[in-house]
Length: 190
Length: 269
Image (cartoon, rainbow over all chains, first blue to last red):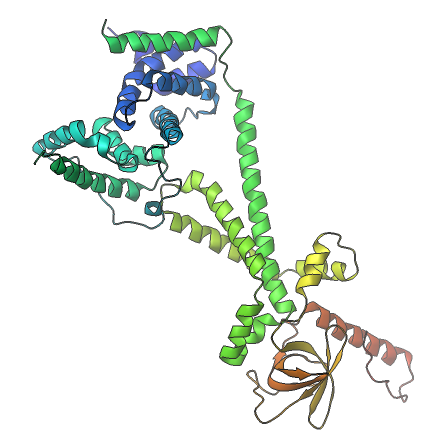
């Protein structure tokens, strides 16, 4: 049976925390820690201390929570903080740096509609994500993780990464092709 | 208890411990309000600078006559390109990039090209509206009277006539071979007209008109390759100012002198 706090929405809890009810912040941590941990494990290249990163994210969330507009959705806001933290961690390591400015975001692309694929395609992709995701450039890895593993919409991914909606579609499409090619090179034929 | 649940509790416990120990505090709401106000202020300031600069470029091109050079065909267009205030144009581009950087916070959902286009159109439209106001003319006059401490230099520097054998001035009298022109800075030039001289806007020019002449200069003589009148609306403020001074001078004399006395020749201010 759910407690009263567990029935509250993220935004309602955030509002309570803003008003000084710090204990409720634990509920938000409880809700987002597994999601963000999965996001971090799949997006980061490997050796980072995920636990430290997650703690830093929640510290930043709490410190900045008065800047959160409770009339908007909490999820993209916390994911945006996590995205910034992960990107900074990747930049610090200097491996596969994410471009500060990307040509993909300048011009419009043909609209690539959201299409998670059929069941067999999903299974195929799940195997590819499991085996070959680490070899993909972070620029392409992240939207793939957010869409297929975190099950976020293009709109949410656009808000988290602060890139145009059509660029999200294009990167996911390219990422799938690259992933297929990487997997074929390591003899995982589909 | 699995390791994930243990981790979850560990992070929650550590964060709550920091909060309760006073080590971790929320930033006050006023911090975010101030940040938003500063952000908007920065956008407004950069936007203000951009439209001032864009309208100043428009003003300066009219003030030194460079704007009218393309009327003389390809050579005129080449002169126009050379004369453009590239440093100011580069500075404007930097301001536009800065505006785009600020706007990205709100416009990231659409490709950058769209927000850049919107910014360019907004800056162009606002600066065009400013060129219709007497702001730059007034600032220019203040600069001429040394009443504009910092911007004064900018106005004085960019009012100079364009390079490349292009001259701007008022016709003061006609001669058998052309006319005498009072140029800038206060020099008298003898303009020679030949059958090869082109008049892209017609030959309807007379004394006191402001004109742009392109041609080779030897001493105070210019062999005109092209002559273009500049309307009062487009006339650079320094020449417009001279014309008004002359008109005022004549009106004053007409009022003061008896009707049968001849008017003296126009004088330079």
